[in-house]
Length: 341
Image (cartoon, rainbow, N blue to C red; front, side, top):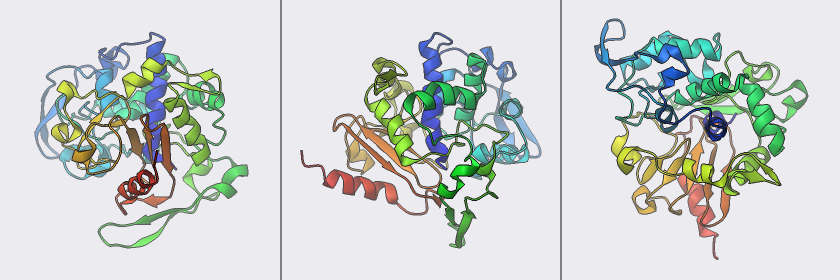
C-alpha cells in the first residue's frame, strides 16, 4: 500500500498527456470537467449552515498539480469543509461506494477552502488529476497506468489491487493511534483485505500497491530524465519542469501552507508538479542536496531522488499513519552519512 506515493505516478501520467498537447497548465479545470465551473469558496458558518463567495479566479490544472487548488482532505479535522467531505463520503484513497467520476462530481458541490493559487493545502487534488487522465485519454485510469507506465517500465507488481496469486506476498499494515497510543493490525493483507479485489474508486491520490523493485524502476526512469532501459515515457525537459518549484512567486511550502498535514515538512521546500522539491537543506534541517525531489505515503513509505548525487532512496514499511515515527529524517542521516564521494 503505497498510498500517496501514487501521486507522482498520476502526476506523470497527466504530464505525459501534456506533452502530447492535450491541455495547457493554465487551462481552467472546468474546460474538461464542466462541474467545476463557478466553484464557490467557504466564507463562514458551520458544516450544517454556511456561506460561500465566488472564487477570485478559476482553478487551473497547475493548481491541482501543486496542491494550491483550494481542495482539502476529509481526515484533516481542522475546518468545517473537512466535515463536508466526510459527510459526502469523500475519504481520499479510502473512499468507498463511489466511482472516480462520482467523487469528482461530489467535490464540485462542496465549497473550496480558499481561492485557487492563494495557499498550499494537501488535498484530493491528485484524485482530480486522475480523473483528468481518464477524460483526456478516454481510458479508465487503471488501464492508462497499465499500458502507458507499468508495462513499459516492467512494473509487474503495481496496481490498484493485489491478485489472488500474489496475496501471499502482500505485507500486513500496522497502525498506532497517535491519541490513544493503541497499536494493532490495520489490514492483514489476505483475501479479506479491501485490496484483494478491484476497487470501484480508482484513487490517483493514494490507491496503488507496489513493491520496492517496481517503485525503483519508476524512480530510475525519473532520474534518467524520462527513460528506462531504452523505453522513453517523456522528455528530460518534462521531468526537469515537473521537479522545479512551481509555487507562485517562488514561495516555499512553509510560506504558502495552511495545511494541517503534509507527508513531508514544509520548511526549506517548494512544490513542483507532483513532487516536493528541496530548496534549502539548512532551512529544512534535513541533510540532502538542493534539487532533491520526493514524497511519501500514509503507511510511512518514502522516496527521494537526488540528481546531484545520482541517487535514489526508497523506504518501504507498513506503519500507519506516517507521523507515527520519524523514519524519514533518520533515513536521510544514515544514507548521506554513507556518501563519501
